[in-house]
Amino acid sequence: MLSIANLSKTYSNGVQALKDVTLDVPKGMFGLLGPNGAGKSTLMRTIATLQEADSGTITLDGLDVLHQKDEVRQVLGYLPQEFGVYPRVSAEVLLDHFALLKGINRPKERREVVEALLRQTNLWDVRRRNLGTYSGGMRQRFGIAQALLGNPRLVIVDEPTAGLDPQERNRFLNLLAEIGENVVVILSTHIVEDVSDLCSRMAIINKGEVLLTGGPRDVIDRVQGSIWRKLIGKGELPAHEGELQVISTRLFSGNTMIHVFSPENPGPGFEQVTADLEDVYFHTLRQSRAQAQVQAA
Image (cartoon, rainbow, N blue to C red; front, side, top):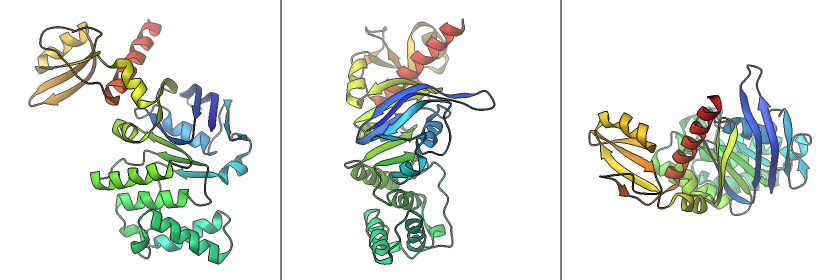
């Protein structure tokens, strides 16, 4: 169990990246959803002992993450959003080097660990290729291999599927799901589908604040029966936004498909649709914006 309580962080430029964040993250896949700039990466780096918090606490199975950094790093695997590799070094050689840095000193044990991880991430057949020749998905799988060194109890992956093609994305997500059966895995992303497909628990964060927590199915049930859609002309959008809770818009055959949150039928031409996590996400962000506008007024 990872427990975060009242965590706050303000940068020197005055931006408050985290505002009293409190979360309990159990074993398994936990999705952290939020738009770019929401504070996800700040939270991930703080949990990963890479930056300080201004206040609050983080504990991992009794370890004080903010003050027992060396101990935490022994049980932590981290794949940051930007994971650089040495392009002229093979996956096998670099992973062996990382294993040595992780404290796996005996050569035989290290060889066995490296082989097992390269096989687990489906990179064994290309282990001798230089990392500079790897596709984006292959590099991400290598990133997970290095994150799994030392049998971590907590694995953090930050925006891992951004830029991957559909096949590589599915392969990577299947790998994460397998890992999440045994340890705490935090998946930080702005891709709603990644969370709905994989995670048993989740949170939505924006502007440094946790807006919603729960299981994907549970939070979808909260809006079920209240999501409606309608195809409108582009020029009709401002009028609908002025009268209704429009939570999302999408261009469709030259017109605009809108999703509206309403407990009752919002009017002629609307049809009720089965809610999904994307509807929950956009509805939650809209509520947050509306509340901020009220407070500013």
